[in-house]
Length: 249
Image (cartoon, rainbow, N blue to C red; front, side, top):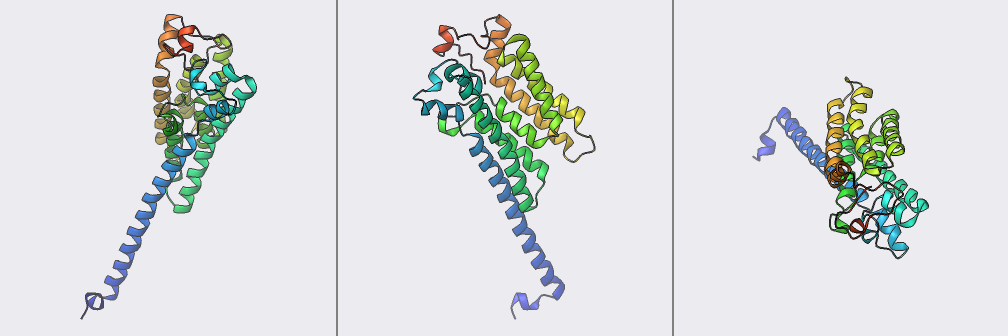
């Protein structure tokens, strides 16, 4: 007599349930991989580099050498700078929405899925495989994922802080640093503490702030030394050659 035929009906039912549980777990594991991989690839599309290449320019060798919107504006003009910002913003938003869509299909935690997608997208922008893992600083992409993850007011406050600080000093780096510092504060104040994933969302903001500040570490040194370039002024010769590189996003 075979083992399967010797099992009681309850044991057979339990075996089927275990198999279904294992299959579900495998599908969920696959869903996390899909979310991270897709979001990284979306985030890694270097729009500043692509638009500049279309005009016969290697943006990494011009201006501050950065592939972000600020340097795109400096090198190619406002129209192209706005286009780069919009594309970088939208890839962050798309990553989060796609991650949440995949989460809904595989029935996994949508908050965790959104956070993983957001993190992978920003990391993809900062460290794109296509450019030897040397990308931008992620501020525009971060703004996009914030809009996808949080109530609109959080994104509005993030943007308002950036604009106010920029208008006061004309330093894009200082505006970016100030806005990412304000992000976890805004999230903690606006997102309800009893909402699912509150600590995860605030923790995500803290991590993003730390990453952005680290990416701006050379800018911080120049700000403290009074040698940082204001937006609208041509970089000094050492910046243009990449010796010190005012690599703002």
